Image (cartoon, rainbow, N blue to C red; front, top):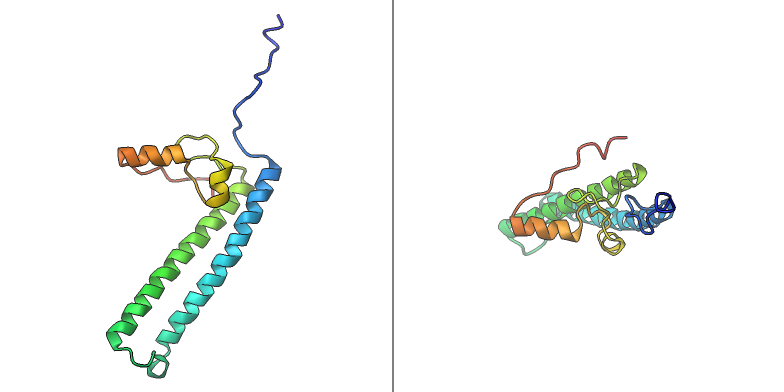
Length: 145
């Protein structure tokens, strides 16, 4: 009879605690501030290159200036994507879905989330996908409020 009332000693967690979510929220907010600052710098550089013939870097031919502008645009686009991923991570925290792997549905390790706070895949899932040469399913409803 004592067997029936026994609780598992180490049940597998399905989500992080509110305190852990707060820690991740702080990490993400710090990264967001830094990323937005970097994006602002890149946009300023693009404006400087686009301002007209007086604003072009002296000594650079048109081809070099265009190449530099394209490079800065690509960097800005990557930065905007990174910011969007961080914002989506904040939404997942709000929805209590943060830190859950899209493939395995298990918690992503805290260590990974501290380094890559916008991660949506565990290391095991990434290794498996790399091995199988497949893509992970996309989130569908996690970003809706």
